[in-house]
Image (tube, helix red, strand yellow):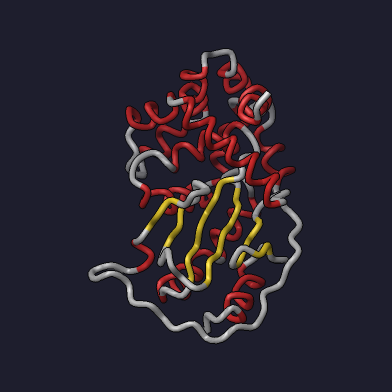
Length: 248
């Protein structure tokens, strides 16, 4: 049984409880002191925070793809600790570090439950530049999203009886996600097409499972700086590490 099958068969029973229990993870590294990294000018007419590329890990890289300092965050869209970082740190990371061209910020999804998987597909639906703003919007309204999902838990569970090309379409309806994303520029028809693409949904779950095992990601948020997993999960911890790595 693949990770995708396990998620789709079990994850809607108690979405809020699952989201809370899956947050938090151990990390094991520090960042060595490095020479100061010079700022890099963005492409003409752009800021680095306008530039998005998709990595080989299906992560979304914000900023200079050749930045000397590379930050990777494994995050769950249903994780309150990830929401806390998004609300209290990611704006500074982007404006003060990514925009200098010294630092890139790659966000990769770790999937904890079925709502997580639906959200991960929806933030990917359409232009790649929408991924980071939509993810931030989810975290900013996470309590309401999860409360709606929990209130409709039985309907969400019933969605698992549907064929693969229908179950996530139905789950998004039950969780009120079409209205949420519609207010942020993603139309219902396009959203339904993305969720009906079972292969693309499966790939997100499989990537989460494979990468978490390969890289030892046991919870969220988990951060890597220049491929080293670091002992940090808040902006107060991350910022000094970026400065030691040369972003000062």
